[in-house]
Length: 228
Image (tube, rainbow, N blue to C red):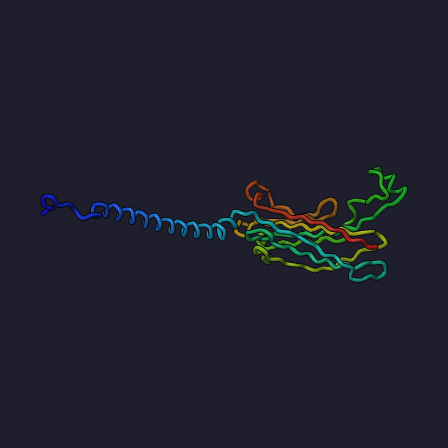
């Protein structure tokens, strides 16, 4: 039975269902906010750990440390330490590398002035004479090659000794070339080619179509060492 004549509902009873609905909505909003923050955190983690590195291009740096290792009969022994380092955010597959070392003479005085170059105290006999060339193809560029993959931040160094005639040259130039792709890209076959200058170069095998060649990345580095 409802309230009798002259009676009314208890104070606050009419507003109770409305307050209850507001509490439920508030709880739902807070729950959705927590779930959204968690989902965004998961997405951010996955993006930073997986998606972003997968979109980043491969980047390999090259440095060469040169030091005199000895001298005999006018020939200088130079120790070369070449370091290749993955400075990108994605794994790298190195397909091939090439070293070219050239001896270069310097001409002074009248000989320099007669070269027709810009006025100066000396001129260089460019591009010089190749005294050493070495090349190597790794797995993916050829059959049976050893793998040469680099994870982000990983580095590999290689030491070698180069001998230069100090009577024939004034300094030597060390040139390093690397060809590589992302670690998860299909490999591209390469070959070593001797150019007209005597230098060794890396070239794709067969016809270089846009798609496979577009996956190739290169890093070239050069430094010089005086024989004086």
